[in-house]
Length: 356
Length: 256
Image (tube, rainbow over all chains, first blue to last red; front, side):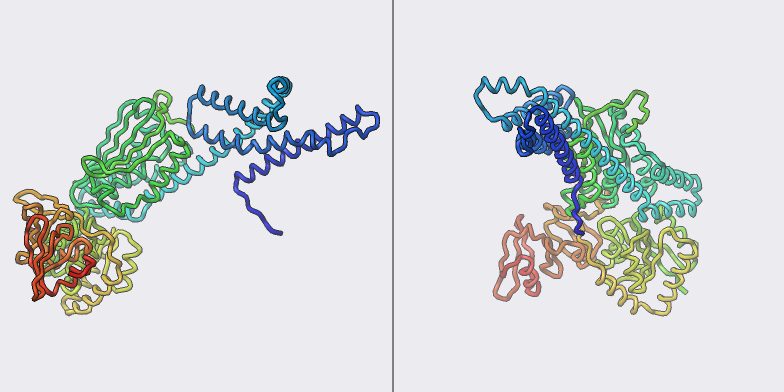
C-alpha cells in the first residue's frame, strides 16, 4: 500500500476538511429527512436537491479555513496589543462572512441583500467563530510545541558548548598548570567555576523564559572560565540598567552570542581583548548588545555566521515574530557588535523566574 | 653533553608558565623563551634557533602548522606538538608519526615526549623529521586565513599594523621592513617567512628583497632586458626582477 506523507499543516487541513464534510453530510441528511416529513408524497426533495442546497455553504467555509489560519498566524506574529488584535480579527471576520454570503447567494440588489444579511448574518458569524476557535486552538498548540522544541535544542547546544572538548580540555589544562605552579587556591577556583558551568548545563530547568539578569549570570560563569584561560588577554564588561535586568528573555539566548564574541574577538588575535554585554530598555523594547573588540565581522571574512547565530534568529522569530530584530555588525570603534531587540516584558517584581 | 635549548609556543599564559617551569626542572634542557602567537614564534625560531620547539596547534592568526609553513619544514627544528583537542590535527600527527602531547598531560607524558626528542636530536634523526614535517604541512590544507595583522615593537610600545595597510615590504638583513603610509617598521621575520604568511592574492614578491601590495601598484615600467620597476601609488619605485615577472603576471592575470 502506498503511503502518503503529509506535513503537519496538511494533516490539520485534511482533518478540518473531513470534519466539514461530516457536518455537511449531517446537514444534508437532516434537510432531506425534514423535507420528506413535510411533503405528502415523500419525494418532494431528492438527495440531489438536498445536497445542492446545503453543501455549498460547507464547501465555502471549508475553503475559508486555510485563509483564517493564515490570518491568525500573521496577526500572532505581529504581536499587537489587545485592542488592535481584536479590531483586526473583527474586520477580517466581517470581510470573510460577507464574502461567503455574497458567493453563496449572489447579488440581487441592495434591498434583497439587506434582507438576506439580516436573516443569515448571525448564523454565519457563529460559523466563523466556531472555525476561528478551532484554528486558534490548533495555532497555539503548534506554537507551544515549536517553542518547546527550540528550547530543548538551545539547551542541548549550550550543553554541548560547555562540554565542547576543546573548551573542557583547555580548562582542565589550566587547572593542571595552576597546580604545578603551586597556585592551589586558583586551581580550586577554576574547578568550582567549571563545575558551576556544568551544573548550569545539566540542571533540569524547563523554563522557556528567564530574567535577563539570570541569563547574564550564566554567561558570566562561562566567561569566568575563559578569563582564567586567557588571563591578561580577556576583559569582561557588563553594563545593565535596573529595568533591563528584570526583562523576560528566552532562556539561553545570550550564550551563543557570548561564545561567538570570545571565539572571534579574543581567540582570533593575540593582543588583549574585551567582551562587553550591555542592555537597556527603550520605549517598549529591550535592547541587548554583545560586543567584542576583535577584528570585526567585516575583516575576518569567513566569520562563520554559523549555526549558533542562525538558531538565534530562528528562536527570536518563533518567539516574537517580526517584533524582534537581530543584527551582527562592525562596531564603529572596531570589533563586532551583536544587537538583539525584543519586546520589553518585565518579570514580576523580586526578579523570581517566570514560568514558561 | 650540552643542554638542549627549548622554545615554548602557546597562546595561553598559564600553559606557557607551566611548561617553562617543567622544562626548568630538567637539567638537560634550557628554556630560551616563550611566545604567545605565531608571528612571535616565527621571529624566535629564526633569531634564537632553538633545538626543540613545544608548539601549540591552535593559536590566533597563525596556528602551529602556519609556523612550520613560514619557517619551511627544512629549517624547522624538532617539534613536539601540544594540543587540547582537534581530531584533524591528531589524525595528521598519527599519520606522519610526529610527536604530540594532549592537554592536560601528566609529568610522565611530557617526560616521555622530551625523552624521545632528546634521542632523536642526539642520534641525528633530524633528516627523517624534516621529511615527516614536509609531509604534514603538505597534508594540512592551508587555513584560508592569512596574516591580517602584525605586531611591531616601536621603542617601548607594541604597535599593531594591519596587513592591508602595508604598501610594500623590504628585506633588511634577517628582518623585514614594513612600509606603511610613509612610516617604516621593522619586524624580526625574514622576508621569505613573511611571504609565506601573506595572502598570495594580495601580495607578490617582485624581487629577492621586496614584496609589494598589489593594491598599491600604479604602473609597471619594464626595460628590454626584462627587469623592471614597479611604481607604487605614493610614487615609490621598487625594482622588479626578471625572474619574478612571471609570478607578477600570474597574480595580475595579464601579461606585462
